Length: 89
Image 1 (cartoon, helix red, strand yellow):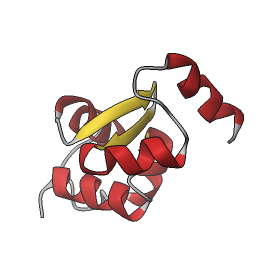
Image 2 (cartoon, rainbow, N blue to C red):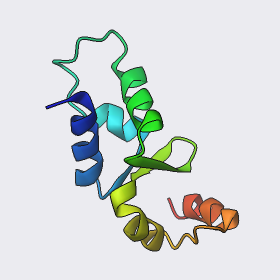
Image 3 (spheres, rainbow, N blue to C red):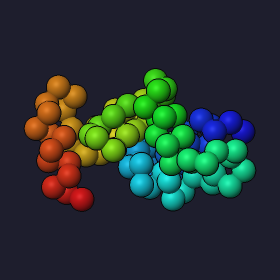
Image 4 (cartoon, rainbow, N blue to C red):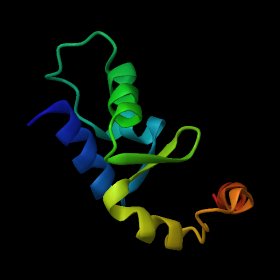
């Protein structure tokens, strides 16, 4: 399984969204040959269209976009709604 697939599956198991801190905890990077697995996870999420940003540090799967937006009651075009998301955490 590729690193990207591991990150994707971890986010999927987390409900389709995750913070970088959550991903750093739940992705098993023990067999990755990198000295900076946290940076690798961040690069994978930021550079691939399979993921989209809800807020800095909070990302979701593009395939789960509608569900995630509904779950947190975010309107796609309304930036204020994203701020309200973090008031609920």
